[in-house]
Amino acid sequence: MIRLSDLILPLNHSPEELEQAARLRLGLEDGAPMRWHVVRRGNDARKKSAIKLVYTVDVEVADEAALLDRHAGDQHVRATPDTSYHFPVMAPADYSGPRPVVIGAGPCGLLAALILAQMGLKPIILERGKAVRERTKDTWGLWRRSELNPESNVQFGEGGAGTFSDGKLYSRIKDPRHLGRKVLVEFVKAGAPDDILYEAHPHIGTFRLVTMVMSMRETIEKLGGEYRFETLVSGFDVGEDRKLRGLHLSDGGYIETSHVIMAVGHSSRDTFHALHDAGVTMEAKPFAIGVRIEHPQSWIDKARFGECAGNEILGAAAYSLSHQCSNGRTVYSFCMCPGGRVVAATSEEGRVVTNGMSQYSRAEFNANSGLVVTIDPGKDYPGGPLAGIAFQRHWEDLAYIAGGSNYWAPGQKLGDLLAGRSSSGDFGAVVPSYKPGVKLTDLRECLPDYVIDAIREALPVFGRQVPGYDHPDVIMTGVETRTSSPLRITRGKDFQSLNTPGLYPAGEGAGYAGGILSAAVDGIKVAEALALDLLK
Image (cartoon, rainbow, N blue to C red):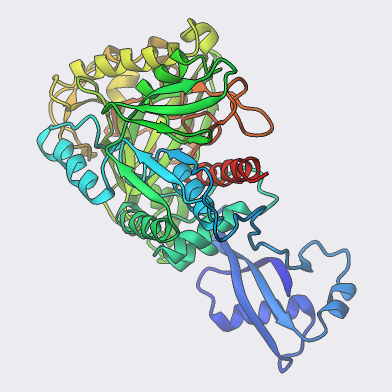
């Protein structure tokens, strides 16, 4: 097959026009046989009056070698690369050796477990939270009734934190082996929409993620995998030679194992403490904190797409913003959720944490995004690898108090924040979506001054880039503290812990990913490394 890239057509073109553009690129006559399918579709909205769609297409024609020779040197005409997945090793059909353990059933753990199961290694998956359907009920309990289950919430349970998100499936990671494609293919098999295979910025949404996660669990179990929900790892048994020997469970149980993938996500703070107690090498790393900022989605659509706002192909508009501040901090948008809502995302009692979520339709009234500021362990939370956890908890504690000590979130209007005054009264043109509720106040009560100062500097800049972004009624809700893990569980080229062989730190919680796709890809890499070591 031949891959054609950068085919540019008007927004409302016909399918025939796309085929004709492919024929024109190759110099094929109208009657010449050709089969084709879309590999990627994005848009170029730099000119709002003339938004274009940009395609990559794979075509199948006669005498492809001659056509490739004719277009040699054209970077937009090349042989279609092989994006199929190849297992590095397979267990024998009668394999009865040690079973690897995967701790955590988020995107990283899910793909790690799937790959191990497909290689015939029958993994055991330990998840501290509940199965996804039960977990969803518990999560709604916090949103509707201010009732938190510390072991079953947005952070903990089958599917991980990514289940209650926009379900974005794009990443900036380098992926020469096309492992991201493997992830997307498996997601489609499990019920995700086919368009994630070709959209430039694919997403799934929470409702579809729930059913997809259940389907993938069934696949893993059919291949011999075993799930154990509501099972918390409380300790790590490490021998005098520093090799992993087993896992202690909070219910008093013990699992003997020499190969464990750590895919716990960025909020399993007690697990990080247990790893530290076991002497596992880790280090503090930078992350970011800030707020969730909300605008009516129609404002963002109009600012991005002009008169084309509302077009079905374009969908709900997104944005990505960044500003380098005079105080040395960077302010940037994070986890932008078009047509979604801000959600209560704490996993610990007496603390408030925000996150963003969208459904596949992205049809809710507001757009929201994290608006966060970089912080550095050296100057902001010195004191060792666990100091970032204490730092996060401090501001989450203050947010709980500022919101009224009932899991309501503290909020402030943008105009009041810029003017340096507390917010009160009615919300105005932008009504926050966070449940159970938002209390208007002064966000300086629950964020460092340098974070507020950086946001104040960035907002007018972003307003010039996205008209309406700095409208005085825009609402900001605190606090966003779980942007990424505050530490890294360091590993070597073999993907094992630097000082604890048999322990494979993986994904976002270990400091090696940021988002669903990159975490899932990391899960595949770590599973491959473990299998190669186990079957050598």
